[in-house]
Amino acid sequence: MEAWKRGWSRAENKVVMGDGAEWIWNLAAQHFPGAVQIVDLYHARQHLWELARRLHPNDAGNQKAWMKLHQRRLLDKGKIEKLVEALRSIVSTNPEVVEKIRIEADYFGTNAKRMRYPKFRRQHLFVGSGVIEAGCKTVIGSRLKQSGMFWTVRGANAIIALRCCHLNGRFEDYWESRRVA
Image (cartoon, rainbow, N blue to C red; front, side, top):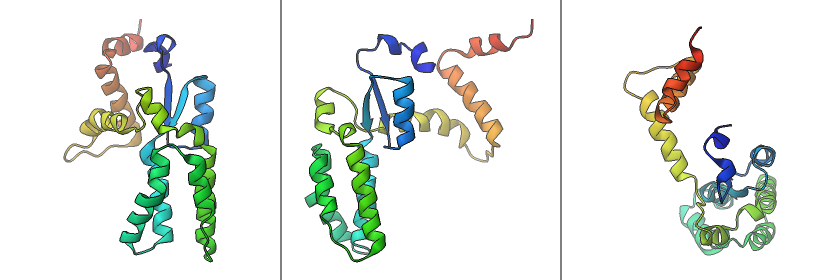
């Protein structure tokens, strides 16, 4: 509803960014059909870092080398099919590592079309959610995380709603809608 209030229907470029979770794309398809879907690059990198730590436990040097020399280049260049192929070619005798490789290869394979980062950049689209997360930190964190503050979930949700109304220029509308006739 908020997207429509803010002019979603008039937007030339429509984008939904997420971390790759299936439920996000289901909601995006339902509420924002036709929008470009992008997996946040930094979340995708986290998946590779988790695998690097499993492949090279307690060896930060090899973890970094694996990321830099092999996987990150493929991810950043949007060569996801090659990345998936490289992941599936890793051999391990550890069943937990084998399962992690499968899970991550499936994650990248499923989200390949959402990870065409060079294409998105050429279209001047964001590929990371840092700006959004910084906004949340500024709007919410700066209000809720002051010294000595403790909140119930109900109280936090109420103050977040008020703060968002205030910052969106809808504070008066909020109170007008709650006025008893």
